Image (cartoon, rainbow, N blue to C red):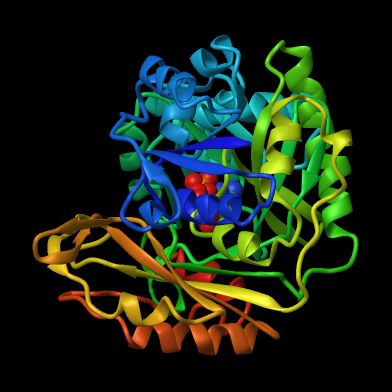
Length: 422
Ligand code: AMP
Ligand code: GLY
């Protein structure tokens, strides 16, 4: 099977590695990829936002499967021309990607499907926002309706701050605050049914202890030993099945990864958000543990027939990913800082370097974005994987590098949640 991964980030690098390990996959290509992806795939300088160009590339290389990684091309509808070209695509259509592209749409789907989530109101005027804030009370949760690269959500006890955030957005969703540890569940969907992967946790704040602004994610681990038994089954029956059925009813069957972001509340798991793709970096540890072939799984989903493959299987033990970000992240980023030390890790069996914002220049490997790379390790348990990941981090350096010291040190939950209210 020839595969094409669309995107440039750590998620796409982790997907490309997992595809390259699938004996059924003969070729991995990427558009446009990054230097890390280039070690396992053939890179093509094609704009991931240009659906016609992606479809043309897929046709020219004879791709059997296209995997679109990031939300921006999915929401823009890049999967559609690929399917129209007769090529199997893992990633939702433009219509189905609205589950992530519009918070109001996803809340409406959840309401109609009876999915447990935070109560919410969609507001377009300051008066509506004020009334909704007062109806739900503090802590206030205000979400930009549109895609905002992780910066669209404000959780605060300060009513003025909540109002100010809403004033800067065209349309917002004001929600009830959900209390409880957060976790992510990635579900591979074929439009009708879904197959869950391992639950994972993502550390979203820039500083230790869950302080500072939100980022795209500073580290993650899987599996979550503290989750009560049966939670994945509960999420599949109370969230995923009714959502897939409702999307089918709307003639927008969801084919791709349904990312279910959840809070484990006192009344059970409730949805914080849906995303229409694998999480980044939370997918990285999950894929490190996957022992069944990824290409076969995604290709069965893209063909609308997950029943053709067995349920995915995972290694015992755990995996941890620690992100190293460049100076200035998350407000900005620094480019061109020389990265040293990544080669030394190439020889390690249990540790790998996942590239996100890197570039190869005459000066060598340099930073080229906010989240630069991640060190990912597998181990016999979370503590073992964590120790190996941090040992890897200590051997890599670049000017201004920032990373959290507490990834997977303890389950993220109350600590991070409380910090949101600073
Ligand atoms: P989102 O972009 O929807 O994932 O929101 C970003 C972060 O804001 C989440 O990871 C949560 O930590 C927090 N958050 C979002 N919605 C809620 C909610 N209803 N209650 C509590 N925290 C929330
Ligand atoms: N790690 C959070 C996300 O991918 O949205």
